[in-house]
Amino acid sequence: MDNATVVMGFSRFNQEEFYTLVQKVRASLPEDMRRAGLIADDADRLLEKAERDAHDQLAQARQVAEQEVENAQSSAKQFLETAHSQADQVRASGRREAEQTLELARQEAARIVEEARRKAEVMVQQTAVMEQANAQARSIISGAEADAEVLRREARSEADARRTEIDRYVRELRAETDRYAQDMRRDSDNYAREVLVEVEQQLNNLIGGVEQKMGSLRNQVQRGRQLLERSQQEADRLSTTTRR
Image (cartoon, rainbow, N blue to C red):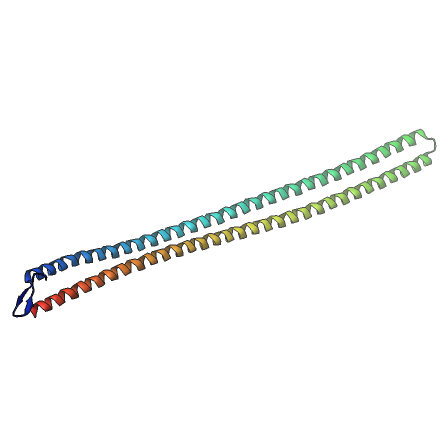
């Protein structure tokens, strides 16, 4: 435009320079459009990758949480089975001890009775007074039988007490193992919920960052479009001036 000539008081511009300028503007337009398209494609790929990563992280977190819950349940089950087995062993051992105690009492009672009978027989054989010997023998046998009955009652009472104590211990042990299993299940559920909440928060942060980048990319595309529109308007204005 600096090379324009003056004819009859009017300025005449250089058409060749004008068309050269128009061609440059037109040549620059496709490049801006191509860059805008590339920016939009990059934004789409970034969003798709972020969504895939988010889904993968969520799936992995769910898998980890499910594995933790399964491990906790398995541990609780093993602990409960072990506790039940120990309780059964304790009960069986207590029963054996009670039976052994009762059997020993029976043997001792039988021994006392047998010894009393032998003493009675010896006394009957050695004494000349049969009635006195028989009376003494009956008294000894009666006393021995009474002692044996006392021993049997005491042994039975002790066995019953041991059974009661063992049953109470088994009930308490089962209740404790049940409470422990419930606590483990509750803790595993809480851990799984915490993991899912943390993953969800990370996913929201990731999506928020992607949306922020998308907003910035949209602003760049919008500025490119505005620049393109201004260039087109400038070209139209120059073309209109030329026609005049």
